[in-house]
Length: 168
Image 1 (cartoon, helix red, strand yellow):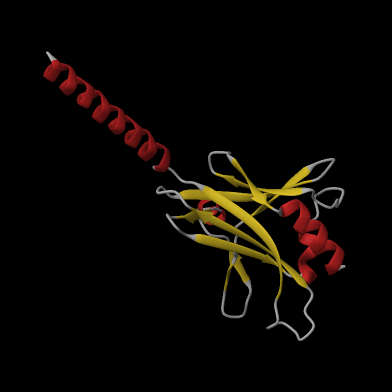
Image 2: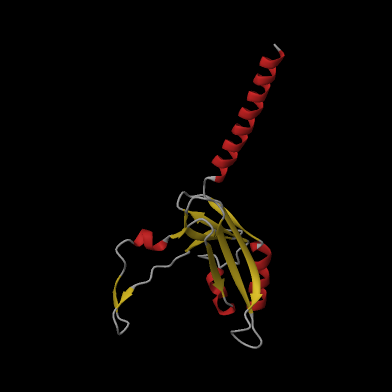
């Protein structure tokens, strides 16, 4: 009788461990986006550089994630900027020939497992961060994927204020 109870307790323990591992693998088997911002001074641009704002996005999950927009939120509104702007097709002289056929696919950005995307706003680009239509200073930034899920950009509220103050 003692052996049967011991065997059933061992089986219960092993099945519990198996359940925990399955839950862990299920949660890890998806795209996990981690976005941060930082202020840095690019010495390669000049000897007395103005600040640049770098936004880094990393896919720490196992599945690829397709990102669409960088959302800028202010007190009175929000606006989005494509992370991968459409590049028009031009001829050798630089004349406009058209747009790519797959416009939606061309605007999105696919991050595989471990991929890193960096968007840099230099001091002369600070106007691009303003929220349309009132050109307000953003409070914080978000990254949106194709499923509509929003990922906050860590430290964006503090870094935006510092960047715009020092860039202007």
